[in-house]
Amino acid sequence: MNGKKLKKIRQQARITKKRSNTNNYLDDIRKYDTLFQDFPQISFLTHNVLESDRLISQGLPPQSLPLLQVPDNFQDTLFQAILKKYPMGDSRGDALWNRYTHALPNLDKQLRSFRDYLEAHYGMWAYIAAPFLKDLAHFINGAPTLEVMAGNGYISAGLQQLGQPIIATDSKDWTKENETGKHALTDIEPLSALNAWEKYQRQIKFVIMSWSPDGVPVDWQLLKAIRESSSDVQLICIGEKFGSSGSRQFWKNASYVDPEGTKKLNQHFSHFDLVHDQVYLIQ
Image (cartoon, rainbow, N blue to C red; front, side, top):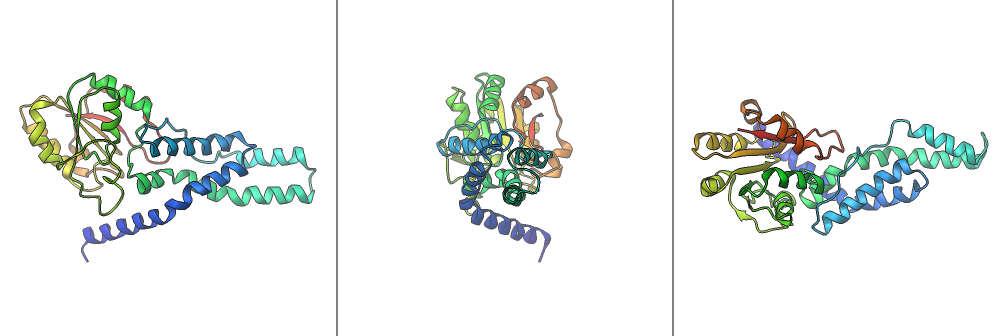
C-alpha cells in the first residue's frame, strides 16, 4: 500500500472516531460544568465551550475563546477549597477530593478536544470568531473578494453579514468524508480553487483561503496561478505554517507581506489549543 493511500485511510479512521464521540461531547461538558460549578476557573471554560456551540449551531459567529485546558495549579485550588469545608482526614472531604480528581483528566481532554468536536460536528476547521470577522471586514474594506475552499462558508457568511461583497466557492470534494460542505451558511458555488480563480480573477482584489488540506499542493498551485496572472490580487491565508494545514511547497515558497496588516488581522484570531494557526498576507 502506498504512503498516500495509507495516510488517507488513517485520516478517515480519525474522522470516524471523531464522529462517534461527537454526540457525547456536549453532554460531558455540561456534566463537568455542573460538577465544577463552584470553581470559576473551570466554569469559565465550560461556559465558553457551550456558548460557542450555541452560537455556531444557530449559524452565528462565535465569541473568541480562552485557552481551553485545566489550569496547572487547579489541584491546589481544589485542595484548599475542600480543606476549608472539611478538616484533614474527614472521609467526606476525601470522597469529594476523589470525585473531583477522578474527573479532571477527562475534563482536560474534552476541553482540549473542542477543535475536534467542531471539525466532526460542524465541519469548522478554522475557528472564525466574530471579533476576527470584524477585523477582516475592516481590512477588506468593501473590496470584492473571493473565498476558495470555503467549506460551509463560515468566513463568507460572516463577512456578508457585515456588508462585505464576497463570492464563496468550494469543490465539495470533502462532503463524503466529513461535515465540510454539509452545513452551508451561504450560497457556495461548486468550483475548485483553480477554477474559481480562473473565473473571478479579474473581478476581485482579495482571495481568502482558510485551512487548505494538509499535504495537498492545491494551495501552491493557486499561489502560482495568482503570481502568473496580471491581476493585482492579494492572498489572505489562514492556516498553521508547516503544521496541520497546507502543503510544504506552499509554505516554503510563500512571500509574506504587509506585517502591520498581518498583525492587525491576528489581534483577535483565537488560539485556544495547541494548534498555532494564524492569518498570513501572501503574494
